Length: 341
Image 1 (cartoon, one colour):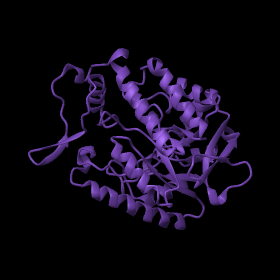
Image 2 (cartoon, one colour):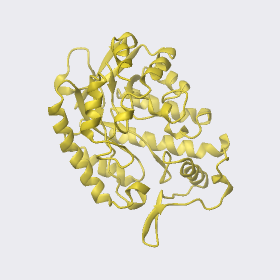
Image 3 (cartoon, one colour):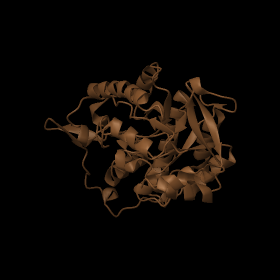
């Protein structure tokens, strides 16, 4: 103990901070034994970039991810005390993302995939609330939009168009949310089926800006996706980032977490850190949440070359296996972890 399967660094992600070396060093200082490096997959259209990336091209994002794989190898050699895993966090904006991910995964340095969905109908759902509301509106209208647009030669965030639906105080109704939630969960299923990600990333990120909203209207899709991922042995991350973004719990929310457990799903830990300050951030309240939800076992990934009896298959790539950790909540780590805060 402990483990994290999801992290980013400012060296390879413009909305993160600090070098990869600094992030890995902090993980070692905090007593992590398993730490996953999962920089974002490149995006392949300029309209899918973010404001902080407006000076970059999609080709430069591809080059950055390749450079990350090189640096991850350097960090693994420099930190034998850590079980560093090298991965990629994917997305599902258009069919192009899935096709290019399949090509990237031919590189066996990529040991696992964090399967995430950050866009609905082409629009980012976790950049800010206004952009999230645009995605909700686009889904309700049944149209595809983009996060960015080129205007007067500059790549800029698509601005609100004055529609009341984008007002800061506006909260979509359950009926207005339903097409958005359906589109999100259908995209998530597409990622699961196409790539069998070893880790299912922040399952209910779709509710980031509406944590009080219910998935009841789309529960059939929620259960469908959970069953599919359980079927190939995926790990569902308990992601502490929700707590720093204003949630009272980590992802996934209680109803989803209980469904995962009831269907035999495996839970793993992730900090989704975006720099040194977020390594292990909110792990103690996440532990309390998972204990209260009666999570008896957490799992972590292990490189296939280090597999042993009792490990379990996960997905179809065969580069990692899953290992159970029973009694995780009483591990001595939790006391020593407090001393590193």
